[in-house]
Image 1 (cartoon, rainbow, N blue to C red):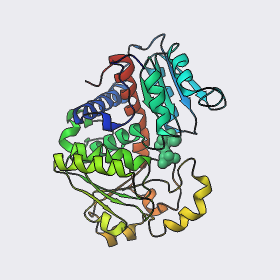
Image 2: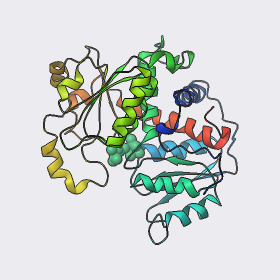
Image 3: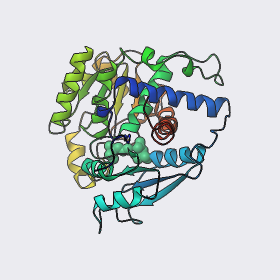
Image 4: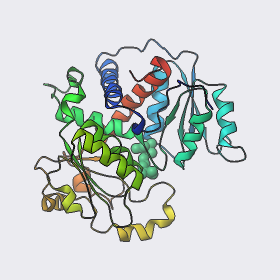
Length: 336
Ligand code: CP
Ligand code: NVA
């Protein structure tokens, strides 16, 4: 097993509310420094390498990661599934030992979540989860940052970014989010994050597409201790009731392509439209989030491209939040 004390970032189930807020506050500060002060990082990762091992496609996560490492003065070494033996021809244990002996951090996008756990177990450097079939933690940080910017203090002009002046722990608790979609990795990540932060969560998934049982239990126990609203249903309208934010994701995650026809049938009635939001009784100024990439079946164009939709701000915030995670693990070496 790996030496103790190396911080990894695999799921928010492992982090405290304070540690999650610290990452958000850091992301907000980075955005302010780079976009509005044009400040350099001082290249704290000069001479260091982050191995970016992706066994699935990626636009946002890859671009955010490579550009963040570059900003910090380090080298992002992209290793796709055709490049290295990521669980093919060589065990993950061996890959983890070998790669971690030569680099300063590993960011991996894998199929099974147990793969990222194996990488972390045998790595001598920090490991970051860039998506697994169970969790996508960096995505949820970007969602939270976007909600903080939306519900926190508003700039008086587009060029004055004021989100850094208020702590996200003051703007996020008390919001109510409705998830209308698949019981997938994005939902699981919200379930291990939102109740802990005091953010209410209503979940509607079609029958047969419910989230993981263990994660439901975990979320229920967190919701109980933080006295936060948490509800599960198979009726989108019921879940939309009183929502500030409606969120969905693709109905067909990477690796599920063969189930496409069946899934499209089973998700009938789950497309997010203005009509559905109205019928369900969302708050009148409800907002929309989606991690992207997006297909029309899960959300109509009239919602996706409307002023309610925060999706492109959310996508940009992948950059600042991933920068904060890399900074925490590879520069500060702590979530404090
Ligand atoms: N949201 C997200 O993770 O996008 P990519 O798959 O393009 O990285
Ligand atoms: N649920 C999707 C998220 C993509 C960012 C997938 O796993 O493919």
